[in-house]
Amino acid sequence: MLLEDFSTLKSRTLVLAQENIDTDQIIPARYLTTTLRAGLGKAAFYDWRFDENGKPRKNSPFSGHHPATHQILVGGANFGCGSSREHAPWALTDYGFRAIISTGIADIFKSNALKNSMIPIELPAEHHDALLANPGAELVIDLERCAVEWPGHWTQDFDIDPFGRQCLLDGVDPLGFLQQCENDIAKYEAKYHEL
Image (cartoon, rainbow, N blue to C red):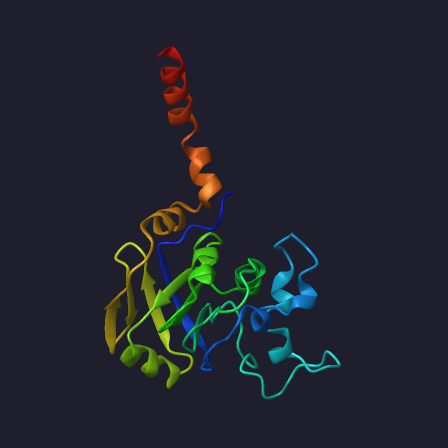
């Protein structure tokens, strides 16, 4: 599948400092009734954004933030823990997030994020703490260099799965990557059958 390619992102941060934000908080189980990605952004952090009557919460950390200007989510430690539901990164990307930053991101969530055009970045505590204390900071994420920069403050390299990185740069998911290799696969298969 073709996705939006990712090389550089310049955006402000939305901060959710709570630790252990699990996938049920990211998208409550009652919204797992579809296998379609489109429209799941409405359910992203639904219980944090709306009360039991569906009215916006005035004290929500999402109040006053627009996904077009705040595409980087800075979460507390152990972000994305809990069940392995792929709906969680689907909801976040449909809402408008392109990157998640934390000191620790759950492995399955990290893998699912990479497969869905969202970059998971783990930073050292000192830089993470600075971002938690400064909501709305404008960051530059450079996937070519594998670096995140807070201009005028610091630049930090980060690690990322090489295959996931290449898929993000190419704007494809793993299946899309394989589809790009169809000619090479056909050549290999033809050669193999000659033996």
